[in-house]
Amino acid sequence: MCEPTVFVVDDDPAVRDSLTAVMKARGQSAEAYRSAEDFLERWDPRRPGCLVLDMCLDGMSGLDLQRQLRQRGMRLPVIAISGYPDVSAAVAAMTEGAITYLEKPCHDGELYRHVLAAIDQDRGLRRREARRLELARRFAKLTGSEQEVLARLSDGQPNKQIASEMGLGLRTVELRRAKILQKVEARSLAELIRLKLELESLSNHGARPSEAKPRPAKPPQAAERPGASA
Image 1 (cartoon, rainbow, N blue to C red):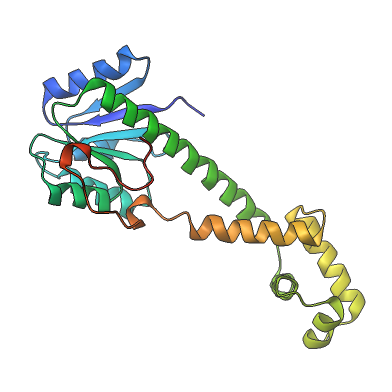
Image 2 (cartoon, rainbow, N blue to C red):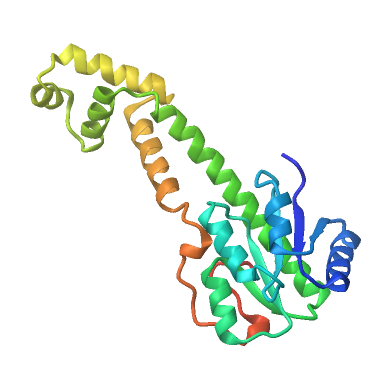
């Protein structure tokens, strides 16, 4: 995987240059974009990192860009910045997924601290998504009848009960159970159930940051979304 990049979106050239220079001076890769439209056109979602996003952009606003990313299923962590902050703007930004909301001019150390937290969050999201896709790939190999057997096994039904209720021979159920273990790459029934629960958990809790309920905002300069690293 390529190194994480800080993507800076701001319509002020001086701010773009300043923020990218701060990141590069600390050894962090950074790229600048003059508008939300420019970012959407050029950014590759496969690239890890975080987004430092001005809320008051010409054209598409920072908030609109956050919504576009959410609608496209892109969960790049966002650090919202603004030269005209207020509590309602902070709440809106965090509701759409921002991990923090900072007032311009941003203090270099504070900004970099949030950048590191955002990159760490992105790394975790990508790791969990890779795991979810891997488990989904395994379970997708099951046939319809195997999925039904798996559902009954998950409910704690013994082989004899499954055979009776599905109108199958006991040996058939045992063979299907063995096939399920093989396809899912589980060494035992206990591991099979654990992997199934893990997939369900990753799928259910893989909600975008915007789907988390933010707590009431602090003063704009210090406002942070719940769960963001400090």
